Image 1 (cartoon, rainbow, N blue to C red):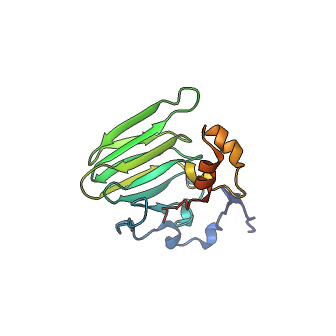
Image 2: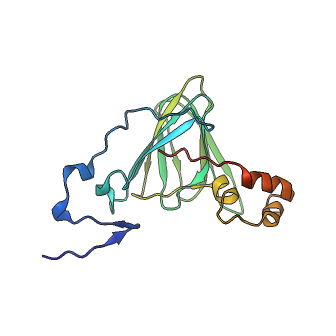
Image 3: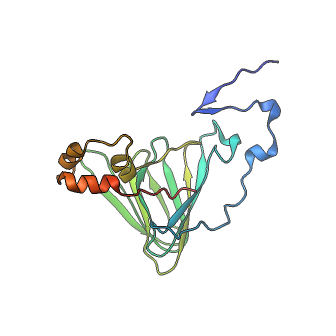
Length: 189
């Protein structure tokens, strides 16, 4: 029997005749992420890149480790809703609705609290407790994608015209030039 190649979400579907248990397994989610970076957080993703067997199944997972005061930058997942549960520590979380309202929904979460970030909306998390914090996020896509707002706007290649950004952010070109030249880190593992 000949099975043709099929791409789903940019990933080649594996021939089911060659699938093996390792295609459905991930080891290491119990290991803390290295939070010694400028953001004080590390995201360990478990999606179809790590588990090929997730392709087409519509789910993925992430472990997020936070140092004290650590945070995830405002970001959005274009292809997934996210549900987050706090395992350790205390997080301040929130999301912003879309235009024209731009309402901010926030909550302070403690151990075993759960919060939902609707698909495509800008959201964030910050550790506001005394020690470290850990959360697990489940996402409704095997390839949720991530758009980190500052990276997308100020780190675009080629760059967005500085006069356009100056008008958009009601500032001057010098400020937008400085922001465009800044190092925008990625804390995804």
